Length: 342
Image (cartoon, rainbow, N blue to C red; front, side):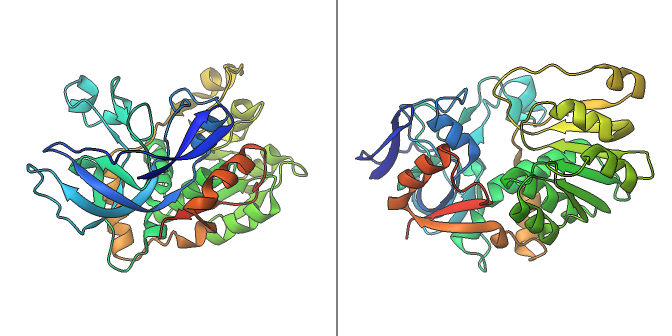
């Protein structure tokens, strides 16, 4: 099969390699569409803790099942699926609680020897797969994975429907968080981003207000929009200096700050707002099958539309060049770039 491999930091190569060999408990998926994630870019730059070159990475994808193991009963050859790209050990306390997203020994597609979706075929387990609704394209279905990141963050926040949420950073995950907040019926959603294009798109997706941190006093604007109380929940969807302090300053007492973004370096922040205001700082990591089951239902009944967030479509042959360009800061206004393998 053909694959795009990060051979070393800042270098890629298209290679020919063997198709994954499946066991009796696994299945093989012919990749039809894949999204490029920010984690793929930082992996290409050598800054990701797990996606370390040399590696065939990529984890946002959909495709068609071409082979099934003898023990697989839930799927058949020809089924169209989108994939939850990680699996826990199934034995530890976290897995038994259903929180396998924080399993200490979980395995991920596109990490180490498990070849990712920047290749023609990917091996997966049945529990990781969810059927693509008949009316959906492969490209749209590939967006289920980043949406589940946003949905999991919203679920972690437990924000009241009458509440106010702020999303700092309106890139892919910030935009998916806004979409999830809207899907959950949250009344007031405020997005913040330096990009005019992304601010405009955030309003289309579900934000009720937007801020430009290059021109606006974002904290004051949030306070003005909430009668001086601040937001119930602030989601940090982009890592930038002072993000936690800013988020705390615009959250109400007993409010919650949710950290979605992966920060490259350790940060210092003021603990006083947490202690004095009884605020919470919550981490969120990926998702579980609860998020995938939720999104599958919403996609099936057409109450959730993700296709509008695809802002650029490319071929597999173009992917290496585009990833290299993204690593240099190009395509900054794109929300989601999707690779088509057909």
